[in-house]
Image 1 (cartoon, rainbow, N blue to C red):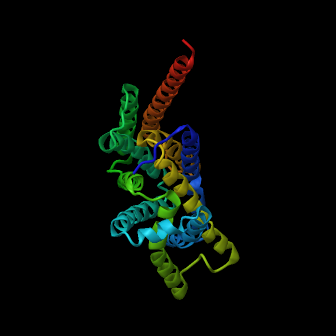
Image 2 (cartoon, rainbow, N blue to C red; image 1 turned 60 degrees about the vertical axis):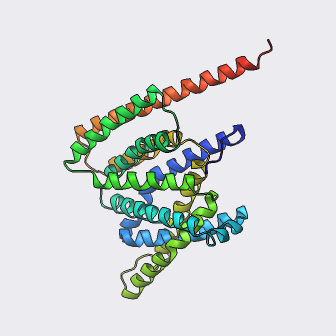
Length: 309
């Protein structure tokens, strides 16, 4: 079920979408910092699951949506869809954390460039959203860029493809499930808690854990809570109020920042990769210019219709 976007919701929804992708864009810095402290990818993932539920629960309490959470567990259909969305986001988290802690942030950024293409196509296919000719030009340019990236890697971009398809599928499910953003996110976090808690306890029992062996490391671990929940909450809220094609365009912010982080971290940047990102950025610029001109034309038409005859 999709909430219609009216004048009172459009701007907050747009700002929420921009905010979530900005946060996702710089998130590799958090995981790189944790890796430098001795965390491995699985321990980071476990702490994400463990501490995110506290922040998500706080959002539900503030929004007074406890009734929605209880209703989910009395509706097998809704619980089933949220279980599937939980599995998808867990896969996405795991692959992304591994990539950013194993010098593959550039490849991860490619995945989040592919994802907007999927969102636009899915929006057209499932939700009958329209894409004008400039939108198709933008998609074509970005698609060429994606192919160049695959050639630059010299192999199928598995990390990119898993990230793109898992998150696109997650977005579709969250757009269709009839539950508010905070309540749905809290249920997803609840479903992940047993796995995160079990792994953290196992690491502490075997002496292999890092997250709880000092106050400094505990702060690094706890940071996963707000860092995980805040952008997801913003995404889930905006995804139910904006067309998937709009979400797809805004998402170019995140991989661009991830790209910058990867370059800053010293990952190899070949001429072929530079060319591929050139195509992608040109596609994003075309889409942005078309959206701006279309919005200006709509405002002009609205102003003209409001003038007295």
